[in-house]
Length: 216
Image (cartoon, rainbow, N blue to C red; front, top):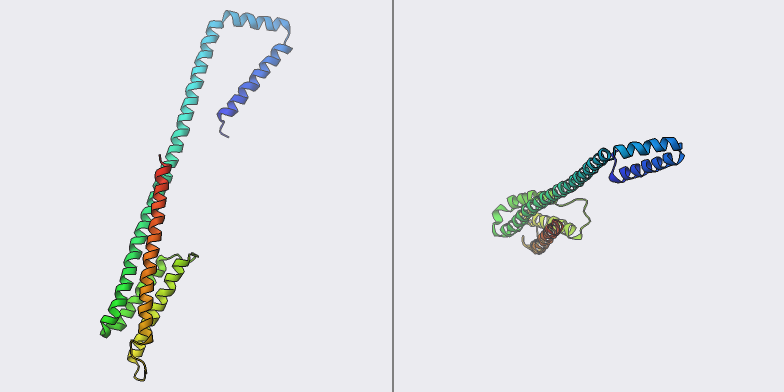
């Protein structure tokens, strides 16, 4: 067990009490001899005591300095860890922003390039999978769940448009109800994505502000 300053202080007090008890219980002759010894060697004993006191103070100062350095190192480690976490979060947000932009761009091109709608749906599904993997599957955040639902509805609506286009017996135009649904989910997803990215950016800013205040 590592002895602290409080432990040493209690030990010194205990030794002092033992010495006092010894002088009270010791025979008078022995006490006289000890007093004579102390009188004859008082300069040496004072020197030894002074050296011991100075050494003790130096050790205690060094101990305080080491404790302070350890605390500072621990604070620096925590700061670096938080900064790295913020960097990872920023990278995650940037990648998610790219994915959201790609989804919206594909949703627009889906209606502009009708001859490539099957390929566009395939790409949408790939980006949908990436977005889902970037979002926390165990998170109870309402906004993230809304994004997932709108993304799923957008892909399904686009698939419905493709199936209607391929059907020879469809009584609706290829851009009927399914097309209107796809447009609605595209706009809603763009809105939710923008809101989510802004929210996550605010989290990073708050964390960095807390780090700055804590590091002052």
